[in-house]
Image (cartoon, helix red, strand yellow):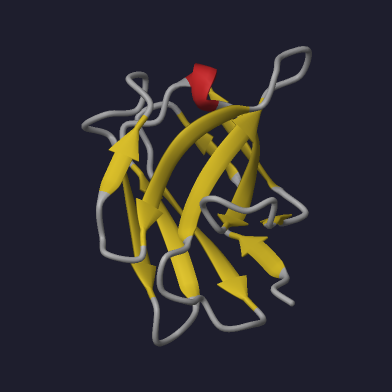
Length: 117
């Protein structure tokens, strides 16, 4: 069974950068998808970016060109490099692991990102 632990959340000024990391306790198998989601107060959780085991990526329009997702299958980690941060990026960021075509999905506990204007 996979468990996920996020780290790297912090308070930064607008225009700054942060790098979030997510460590999986189990093995990240081929065919799985790792993603980052975020949830701001009073809003629904939304997809930020995901990456397949083959390295294909997708991003929310709001973060394209500013955020970069990467995974290391050997180290069982996924990261999210966030540049040019905006106050509207403030949220709790969650790491997610899922196996397409199944009901298997795992969430981390979340890490807080706050961007001041």
